[in-house]
Length: 262
Image 1 (tube, helix red, strand yellow):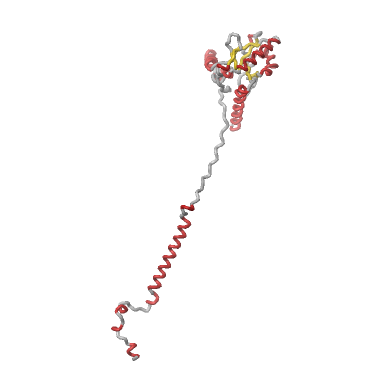
Image 2 (tube, helix red, strand yellow):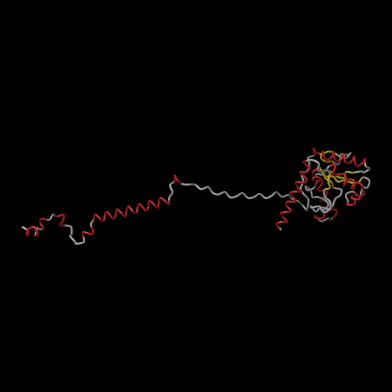
């Protein structure tokens, strides 16, 4: 009986099992374990890819937008005033704002400047001084003639001419606040440095400020304009102060900056 069991005929083994080769190593390559191993590798790979995707690709709903840091605005440069050979630019006064200060109506000043000059002239005469108005408001066209035509007639260098006469659009006379004054008793000194030796000039030195007039171009003035003892300007209201002192302030600021850079 025992021999029959040990010597089981080949015909008794099912056909399906007979087609699979039997090997001593077949137990270590069990298909069941191979499939489990492959499944584990796949799970590990998918998990790793998920982690990488999580950190490398932010979710659209959780995206944090970073505003660009605005660049600081450039510091505006201080306004600079243009000057031509020391002369500052001035606008031409409106003719409706002018008033005649001579009997023939030829010489005019701004209304307040005209009233102040006429009062100063009357007070000076009461002291025996004759103040004569030589020139007041000038148009740009008139200044063009005085600068270019006289320059041509005298064969003057441009810089030399600018020391005694402003180029058009750069004359204080355009404002209607400036006036050239002479001594009616010593007319030979009109428009010359010798005017400073007259009684009229000495009276002006002592009294002009009471009427809000000041000398525009004293000796060694910062604009580099030749000394003009006859040229005075009115600074008795807000508009006249702004016209002259604002231009001077801007010009002085520009000059200081240029000297610092140099």
